[in-house]
Image (cartoon, rainbow, N blue to C red; front, side, top):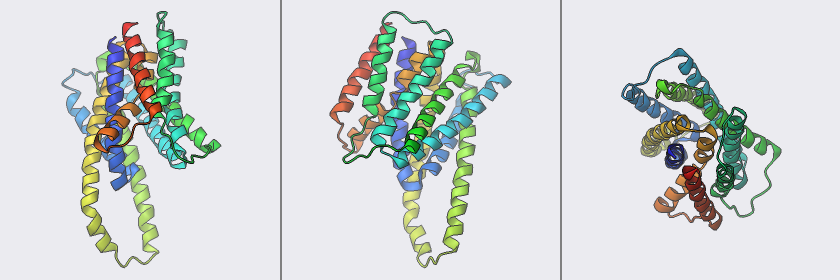
Length: 298
């Protein structure tokens, strides 16, 4: 029961972090927003790690670093596949794969379930697809490249869960702190490369109003950085909940419920931005709650 509660709560909090990160990305770009969020999350986790009584074992720290590199790959592929589109297909595809990979790993590794659990997991997988589905008018079929990137991103997220599952419970938040720190370093490096390339491009072109444009966009960029930082703090909390959920029970259950993260995003978007929740997403939300209740009882 504890695994279901922690994992589903973590997924909803993840959705809130994605919501904040999405708004920040519109102001400062997706890569920089991710890097700033990672830095804020690293600071928060570094402060919280001693409080929860974590131990800094080398094996756990190496696992955290590996998870950080895998997380950076997952983010890069996710942004790339969503940019190609259509999001209505590739977003739920990524979430579905991110749930299936650790679920299969857990079953192969010896996870054992009661009679109701397989039905609940199947229902949860359907909910993952429906919750993440965003209907688009005139959406085109996804390309093989987009599908490949979506599957790759989902698989990388699943591998992240598997790696974190191998950390010892006594390590507390230490592996997660290293994980977020590594991801932040990678994303800042990527952001630096993008910024340098943009600067070189601008130097080759006349920019008569560059100073005026910079002054006009400065407040917007500042707000974007602040939103990204808050999103990073929320993301750190979500990561901690998911990690504790994984350690509290079966990896398969934690991973499937953790893949419900789009639910938090669409709920906040409906409340804050007044965006309409599609009927298919309402069905997904209901199925998500039903599957979580079944897993909790199981």
